[in-house]
Amino acid sequence: MESIIDACDGFFNLPEEEKQEYEGKHVLDPIRCGTSFNTAVEKVFSWRDFLKVFVHPVFHSPSKPAGFSESLSEYSKRTREVARELLKGISESLGLEADYIDKALNLEQGHQVNVANFYPPCAQPELAMGLPSHSDHGLLTLLIENGVSGLQVQHKGKWVNLNSFPSSFLVNTGDHLQILSNGKYKSVLHRAIVNNKTTRISIAMQHGPSLESVVSPAPELLDRENAEPAYIGIKYKEYLELQQSNKLDGRSCLDRIRI
Image (cartoon, rainbow, N blue to C red; front, side, top):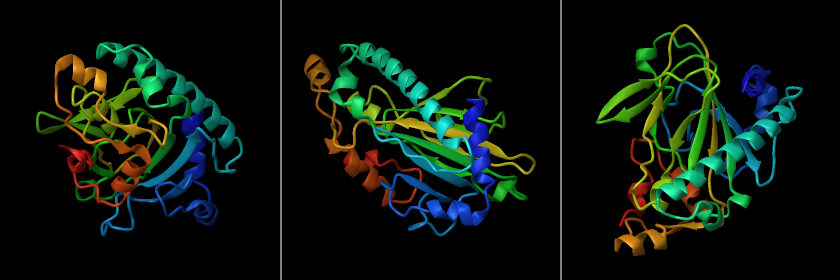
């Protein structure tokens, strides 16, 4: 955890011209860095820099700073193991076989993305937002931070500060776990706020199905409960492209595929 935070800090402190080598334009570009969430459609940018890297099933990495690739590779492997173990427990909690999610969504080829966020001090934090409210795509996001809090989740209509414990993961459930469970698990609406004193670094490792997997409510779950599906099936790759085409405005892409 310390190694990957240090590595990402080193990346964000590279000269601007070196970081610009990795300015991707499309949601499926394997390495992208920049500012805000979706610069193609947003007029007011968020107070953050980001680096998004696809690390599985094919591993990608910036070549700088020195040691970055090695730290990212090891961290990706370890967090992927954690996520797959958690998803076994979630499968069982739904009354399914432990490896149901793993097999149904082809997690052996699962789409894993490391998202590093850099929030520098902001002179007027009450007028800025680190990242607007949104839910994550995918199944689970494992989040760590550099000891500086800034994450808020929506609970009963109110924004609640979350302070993580040292050497721990904060786990967010994502949209595709909500789809697969037919709403039994809810994706977490969250946002990031900024402060005027200290730089915050957060690292979110997102774990999703394979890009070609079609995600829909589990038929076994529907049959057992004699329930109707609440969502249409959609290929994971298409969902990512749908999300990228819209502003983060507190609405989830889930609203667009809800039956």
